[in-house]
Length: 431
Image (cartoon, rainbow, N blue to C red; front, side, top):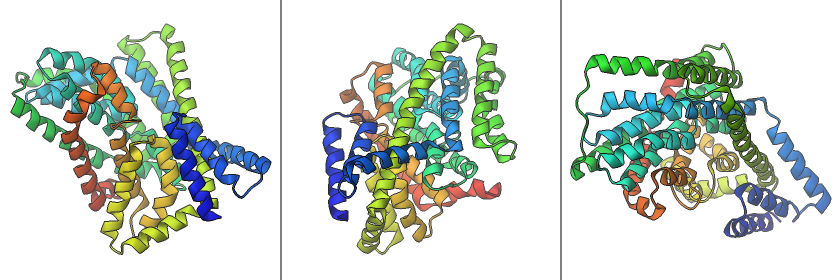
């Protein structure tokens, strides 16, 4: 019966995806079809509904709509432009300066907003025309923007790390937030290295050296935006408030900051709230159906079977981690990040913990791995946003994306096999 359930689950899910059914509905329907193999129709339907509702009944999940709202406020509040000016004054003098500016600004903006799509649109909207005007290949500029936008999902605050905490059974959100800093910076530096080499070979221009006084002025202008990281992360680490309470503080701070910058007015608030509700509804539906599917997989003993198969396939922990990374890289090409984390965390986390891997470390590896999928077709959301902002067809962006993909994967391997990169900061602060 377990084998039949696995077959029904995989086949129904793949068929629904091939038919173009939205991912949330594909997950929910395939989970229900799997339950019908061993449970009658009415109990199966009520159990699925109950598991979806139970999966959403979590105080930690309240942080997600608040961080989404904070990201919306920051995306429209003029923060991207100020961060770009700061980044340009610091790294614009390097070969291919605007590529480095894009990467650094995306890292800062993504970290503040916690959204890769917001970083791709906010930073890309400013940088795409500027890079084109300076003679950069639009496809290369789009590739840089797309890959760098994902760093904000690793550098806190990050909604997906909150989702992982839920899926893992309660790994400390504060520890996950701290663990994401060094890996996120490593990815950003890797992208800057590759982009710099490409820019140097193509002879792209660099900006003039900026005087220290001008850098200081840009820093002061961007300081209120950067201070949000201190307020949110510092408050969590100091124990002043929880991650959920920090998300509400982030909304208030972002709203006040946007009003002070005079980039939005009270007339813009209804549209911002509507966009927040739309995004939140999509995320919560994905979480609900994914939690239902996770229960179905546990009921069918799928995690245990996968665990036994992987451990039986290879005895070396290094090889098993490599296999898990390859599976997640493949999964990321056709599945959105949120359901992937909710579905595969219960499968792989027991395996890596048996190998002695810290669950906080694995969370960073998993999120970093799935970030690559956001840049790949057919469901790479950041890929579509970045190409739309740059007005470049996806087919033209694939080639310049490849060296940046390689940089991300190399960084992923380093983070996977060097646990100290993820665990040093949490250890310093006692998490």
